Image (cartoon, rainbow over all chains, first blue to last red; front, side, top):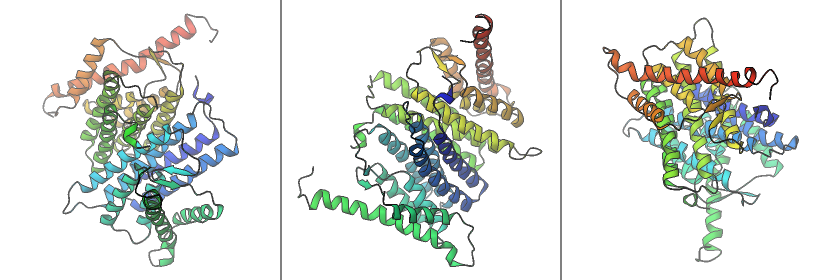
Amino acid sequence: MNIRHYTSVADLVSIANASSGFLSIVMITMGNLVLAAKFILLAVIFDALDGWVARKINREDEYGFGKNIDSLSDIISFGVAPAMLLYMSYSSFGAPYLNLAVALLIVICGLLRLSRFNVITDASDDKFIGLPIPVTALVLGSFFLSGLFQADIALVIMGIVSLLMISTINYPKFRDIKIVAVSSILVVATLLPQNFLSNISYLPAKLLFIIILLYLIVVPIIDLYTRFIRSGPNVR
Amino acid sequence: MNIRHYTSVADLVSIANASSGFLSIVMITMGNLVLAAKFILLAVIFDALDGWVARKINREDEYGFGKNIDSLSDIISFGVAPAMLLYMSYSSFGAPYLNLAVALLIVICGLLRLSRFNVITDASDDKFIGLPIPVTALVLGSFFLSGLFQADIALVIMGIVSLLMISTINYPKFRDIKIVAVSSILVVATLLPQNFLSNISYLPAKLLFIIILLYLIVVPIIDLYTRFIRSGPNVR
């Protein structure tokens, strides 16, 4: 069957997501890591938009074509691209191959996370099981552009993020319009040119990095609390 | 649900496929394009093996986890990695951004090809609809290692390959044990070290390149013949 039979305008947005991820990898190869980080964050915006467009046009996606192209784009933009950015930003002195190991871990956990997401049919609508994969892009991209970036700390954070993706910790979906609006504005603001003389230009990335870190850290603590402490030692 | 609930040993082979693709991209960034081409061909071997392993262990894959992780691995090894190899092997003199455009075309057509493959349920067992995506890896990898490589010819070939992937041309699946055995031996042989003084070391890649080119070119001609000429001008 002709491919046009399956596609919709929402798939063009998924393709824009994948293209941003691919251009990020090209920029990494060219040595322009700042632009690479911005392309990764741009991919997050397209990833958020494709679902929004699909709902606006009441896409039925009866074949699951949209779901497939969405997750294939995600592994490029939120698996391979952040892994390459981490790999290239770390000069492996002292611990050779450690950056390569964590980069591979990001890709492998991303594969497992996306595959599980695609096969879970009984997921409730208000939470994710395991950290959602665009967080790899948000945390590494904002850290890299924040002016605070340190490669060894990034290595530790990305190792933890990878394991959280394949965990069974419940992460809430934020549908609150205020939180979504503020986060979206911050992501767009990180794409603006940065002036190395002015600290203000690093502020959006700094704020975004702090918000994402809180999401990463606080949610597992609350989840563990509700699982083990409040409901007693008997694991459900 | 814990990820171990869905996984099987066949998924480890898919992960090996994705890891080879990722290591190929790392090698491209390091400037070692020969090793990058070999990693892409290694990924083809793992991709062939994961289906074989799944059949050997009688995997049921009731959730479709294996199918998902397989195609997510394919977009890394047969979409992004060949696109990056083509991009980096071409010094854009005369036609700037042409290599970037064809590289993006490979990724986008790969996304569309894999998404369609995943949603087609009524496909007959003896043919593919559109060129299968591992051919990107086989044709570019073997061309690169053949000693005949020319970047501008590769650009043309890969542009055509991309469009054939999203076409509706029927490509046969080869189940004949002799053809599969010869091709497999050739792919493995291309991974051996090459001696720049000896033409024999380029022979496996040369033979593989010629076989894949024949598959690429002859099949569409036969398909067009059976569609239009033999059955008259009325298109089915």
